Structures are given as structure tokens and as C-alpha cells.
Length: 353
Image (cartoon, rainbow, N blue to C red; front, side, top):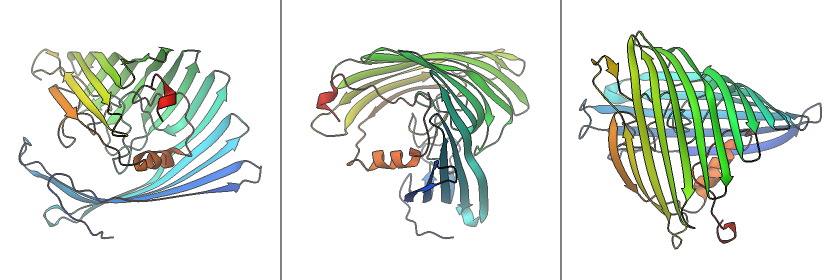
């Protein structure tokens, strides 16, 4: 399949998404929800001006088709399934390299008992700003886990205890395992904080990585239009025969611009430790299973590791198109206690939408 595409300096993306939904009834009387999504894209990236490799990235033609199905069992249980077919063709230097991948991108059971919830099966795991656990819809395949997640909820806090292995990933590693606890506390509407303790075990380039990460991500609303978010993470463990001691932190100040709806100004600073790989003790921060997109650096090339970077930006949303698109992709997926928090609620909700 060939798509008409145009190339611009840096990123060039053409997207098309079709979303439809239908409600039917299963023989047991439970609703059966169906939705579909088709996305096609062409991208080209030229990083010769600042890439250390001084080379042009691949030119990809991409297509992704998803079919979502969900059904309820009683009031507290639900099954969700997402079948996905993804296609990628590399056009660089006349190459005809084509990759196709199909299967269940998600398939899980959700159930609840009072303040407890359980999600079992292939699922997405995304917390905080997705720096240590990726949740990227930009990637053509996406990132899902074969995992079990037990959620516990109190009056002003909630926590997930989780254990999983990669389900459908764009890349593969040897014997990866992730487990730990991720919690959120919210004493009052003005501030809240994420707390986590995560363990990563994986074999990479013949070396076994066993790393603990402990961190906190507090957020506070300083005024009606101003909020401050920060995160600090400490890591320790083993990379092969060497010890790892690493740390990272970031701070983000957000200022809403009331006269320009859906517009804000962001000032952000990112830091993550680095070091010499030949040292007896390593200090390069490990990104676990994180993402480079929309976090820091240029063109998604720099992740949260071995860095010291300032960032100033003014994101602008035209109308509510992006919000509607995001909601349409997650309509059929029940949320348990996943902490997909990107910003705090306003102090006075009567003056804001």
C-alpha cells in the first residue's frame, strides 16, 4: 500500500484516523461494545545537523488498524480486547524492508470488590509522566504488558501492586521482568504526590540488569493559573558485575494563559546522572521502560538519562480536537487505579472547564 506523502524539514507526519463505535447485545444480555481505529502515517527525520552519528533516519510508511471489543459481566467485571494489525515499510535508500505485526495488543479482565480492583492479562501500564513506564500512542505498535495489577483505594490515596512482562513491544529484550508498587496520595485539592518503588530485571547485551528505582512526584497548585510539579528518583542495583548508583530529577512550572484558551507557558528543567561505563561503580541513570517522546531533547532522541537540560515551550490546543481524539481511543477501556495524571485540577472549578 502506498500513501501520498510530503516531506518537511525535521518531522513530516501525515495521519488519518477513522473511529467508529457500535453497541450490540450478547446472548447473556450484557452490552457488547465495538470500536475501530485506522491510522496511516509517513515520517522522515533528518538529524545530520546535531546527531552524533551524522546520518539520516529511516523514512517510514506506517499503517495501524485496531479493533476494540468490551463486554460486562455483572456490575463489577469487564473484559476488554484489542486486536491490532500494524504495517511498516522503510523507503530509505531504495530499501523495500517491510515489517508486519498482528495479534492482541490488549486482552484483560477487570473486576472490583469494594476498595479493591484487579486487572489481569495483556494491558497498558502508564504512570506519572511515563518516564519510567512508557505509554506511547505515537509508536506504531504501542507498549503493553502481560501483567497482574492489584489496586487498593483509600479515602485520600490509592496504590497499585503490579507484576508483568512485556506483551506487545516494538523491540524485544531477554527475560524482562517488572514489579513493584505505585501509589498516589491526595490530602487536599491543592497538592498531591505519586510515590513508587519499582524493580527491573532484564538481560541486555549479554549483561544482567537488576535495578531498584524509588521516587516521588509531588504537584502543587500555587494559584488559580500556576502549578509546580517535580520528580526525584534514586536507583541502585547491579549491571553485570558492577554496582549502579544513579539519580535523576526534574521540575516543571506551568502558567495558564486565561485569555488564550487551552494555552499555557511551561518552564522545565531536567537532570539525570551519567558517568563513564568503565568505572567500577556506574552512575548513568537507567530509563527502565520509559519514553523519549514529548519529554525532553530534540526529535525524541534524548531520554531521561545522562542529561542536563532546560526547556521552555508554549503548547497550544486548537479547539477540543485533541481531547476528543484521546477520549475516543480510550472509550472502551475501563480504568482501575492507573494514575494517568498530567496536571492538577483547578482550585475553583466553577470558573474553568
